[in-house]
Amino acid sequence: MQRYQVWNPHPDAMPAVNIIEIVERSAGLRILVQEYETDRLLAIFFDTHEAYQRRNESWVAGEASRTDGLGKGSYYVVENSSFIARFFAESLLPRKGIRHFSIITDSLCMDILATENPRTEYVKK
Image 1 (tube, rainbow, N blue to C red):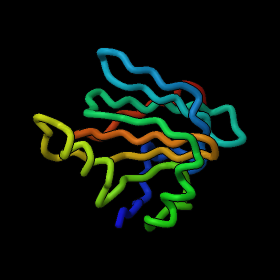
Image 2 (image 1 turned 90 degrees about the vertical axis):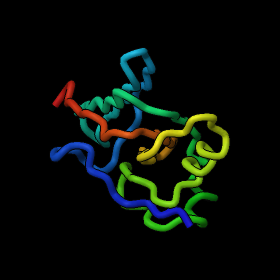
Image 3 (image 1 turned 180 degrees about the vertical axis):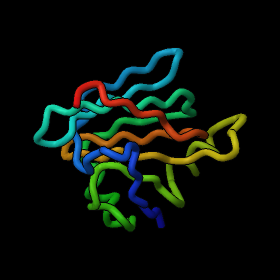
Image 4 (image 1 turned 30 degrees about the vertical axis):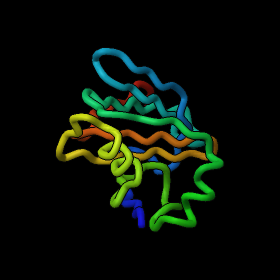
């Protein structure tokens, strides 16, 4: 069973966010989030990532029935991840030490597989 552990990307981060922008470049993956009912914008940078997926929120209802720990904000690290299991099953050269980070909002879910913790920076506070 997947288990969602709360993850705090930044000491000042609020738990509820909306995803504003997703940008993938050679320098990595950047996810810009707006903290719920504020103008504060937090940029989350995955300098290296192995894979990511974007899903609409309808997946969460089915996933919530098969998981533990959801409903405590927007940021999670997923243990016993089915995304990691699928990645290892389908990859020719899977890396060791991969972690599954998840950002879940009211309308969008982002799942990121990475070997390092992301960097964060407030672009508007």
